[in-house]
Amino acid sequence: MPPQVSGTEGYAAEADSLFVRYESIPSDEAHAAVLHLLPRTPARVLDIGAGTGRDAAWFARLGHRVVAVEPTDALRLRAMQLHASPAIDWIDDSLPELAVLATRDESFDLVMLTAVFMHLDETERRRALPNIAARVARGGMLIMTLRHGPVPQGRRMFEIDPESIIVPARLLGLNLELHRRGSSLTAENRAAGVTWTTLAFSKPR
Ligand SMILES: C[S@@+](CC[C@H](N)C(=O)[O-])C[C@H]1O[C@@H](n2cnc3c(N)ncnc32)[C@H](O)[C@@H]1O
Image 1 (spheres, rainbow, N blue to C red):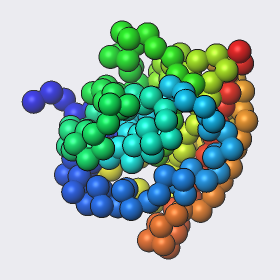
Image 2 (cartoon, helix red, strand yellow):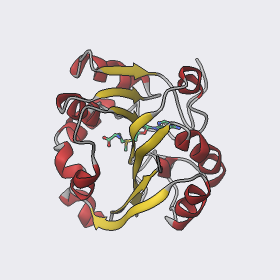
Image 3 (cartoon, rainbow, N blue to C red):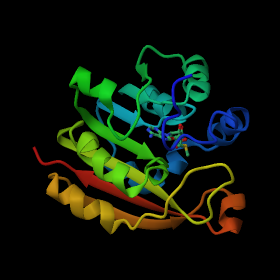
Image 4 (cartoon, helix red, strand yellow):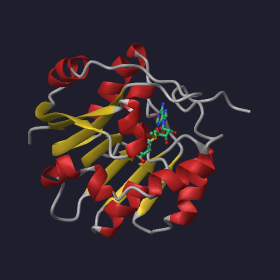
């Protein structure tokens, strides 16, 4: 068996329940803070750590073309069936390198990193950020959410100071457009004290 991708610990074992949980959250509620920043005309979207494909399917329904990157087979293979769409291209790839994606040398109007980056340690995040920034097209946007609070059992997760992303992102030519801290959408996570940071960056034309 190939070695497990760093950050994916716990996901394959919980795939069944995650399909129920993640698919029950409407994407427009999950991304309410950034709806005004999303492309209004058909665009190229990259969803890194796409999970069950909930957001990839949402973007496809909105008329966008989506590349969905997901390293956990138990999620990706089932998501491909659940959200079968000619507008979604699924790729088995992972942070920090995004090596498969790099060979395609594509750039995207919108890059989404939803509830993923806190699974990488500081060294991995430092390696990953230039590889993510390289995939954002000129005039494009990078949107990420970071979870804070208790770590679910069996997961690998780190507390992230948003400044540790904002400062290097600026050096990579990404301008901060939005920095928001909010509560969790689910009652269970709110009760557990989980909060979220949303960051949005633009890349100048
Ligand atoms: C909390 S889930 C979020 C899924 C989806 N983005 C959503 O919002 O529903 C985190 C996802 O990140 C993926 N992931 C974990 N480590 C990763 C890595 N090193 N590279 C890419 N994806 C990773 C997991 O497999 C999982 O699908």
